[in-house]
Length: 604
Image 1 (cartoon, rainbow, N blue to C red):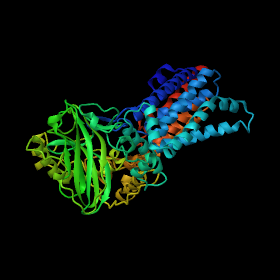
Image 2: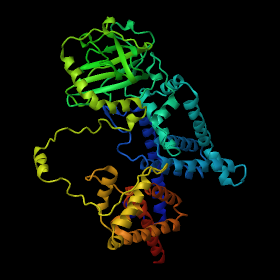
Image 3: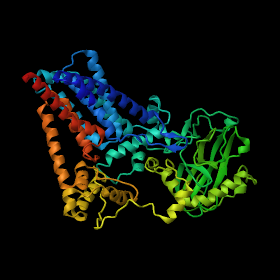
Image 4: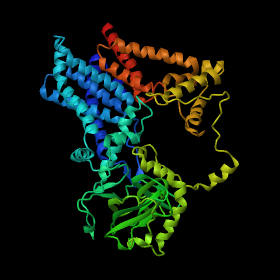
């Protein structure tokens, strides 16, 4: 904006700046799309045992704005471009940006993209009904993109819905994806976000089952649910490896595992099998386990939890690290559901950031259920009891903590996509306050000093519409505040910013947090009343007026403004939120000022 105001003296300067601005957008659209596609498939969102959201720093919707700008700019150039290599590069840019938008999970973005792609389809059909030279040129110049992306949207669903899990694994492997379990989850999560537009009752686990239709193959962890943060060991090595059935792949657990923690240790559960059982049923489960010699964890085990009579755990003997051991677990069942887990533990830590080495589990087996027969532990000669050691203490800790912590862990590990919906340890809070002075003062003075409760009854049934998620509820809450809580002076001049805490308390259940209506009109109405909203409408009128006035000279800028305004309607607060919205709100006034300056020069 500053460069525009300082360096642009006339329309020619503005057009040069517009061209450079557009070229930069093309470059940024390509870089952003490549980076986000790479992060989507190839960058694990786990480090040091902590889950990191792949879009922590940037709103998924607003992050698409420069991508859309680049796509619009590409089509703008394709309307007049004749050089073959430039046409090819612009088609590549359109394809890469389209993949990025498709994978984003942004429903707002998909609405705009659907309109964009529909326009491309109409252009392709236009050659049969129009002899217009521009239509023929744009048809020719966008045909490569149209053909390639059309094939993509036909082939991708066919692969996801019609091929076997083994074929899909081979496709992911052919793409160079190492953490296929992670990639499977986020693909399912993306599809789920779009299907929620149609049906809110669809759940992540059902989508995962439909897409990957997992099967239990003891030699191939990737054929199963694959819903945890583990790596795949394709080639098994180590002392005594010959006891493992040939051709087996392994579940590799290391410091990247996301788990949970108690007051005394960090631990990780990975569900690998579950089944319904009756009271009195018995089951024998076994697995092969290898622990590297540099492993500094406290324990690793094969565990049966749920409808189990007594304990059903088999721990790896850490005195024999560097060799394969077969862990056999006899299980006596109660009526209900039995779950079989892989387990990892490190004492006196809150996550696995200091964990060294790794553990590999391979070839889990489950014998048939023996109806109403009990299996004696002593009958399984390689299920020897542990003597007293440092491990026993950790086992006892697990017993006391399991009842409190396990329900959430079961939910996370048994639902294919829920691991991304529940942040287990990203923001671990210390159980004790590290500031004793603040803790002492809090006993005397409440920290809740900024919250001023609304007086009216603003109860509202929370709704979740198919497209707007909870936006409708936030909009209704804003109207209730205005109609019921505000008196006439506040309706005219506004009620300030107390409503931010009301939103935080109502929607986040926390008086110290803030939230807002996610709509600039309602936001302005609440803090500055009808007077402020009228001023905003007048300001907005002038913005549209100047964009339309200069649309012939700067058509792309109008498109960019309208696109940004559309995204802001569902998330923005002030007229200049996000900052790019502020840029496009002020830009037409700068353009008008430069045109006036040029007109005055001509008159003088």
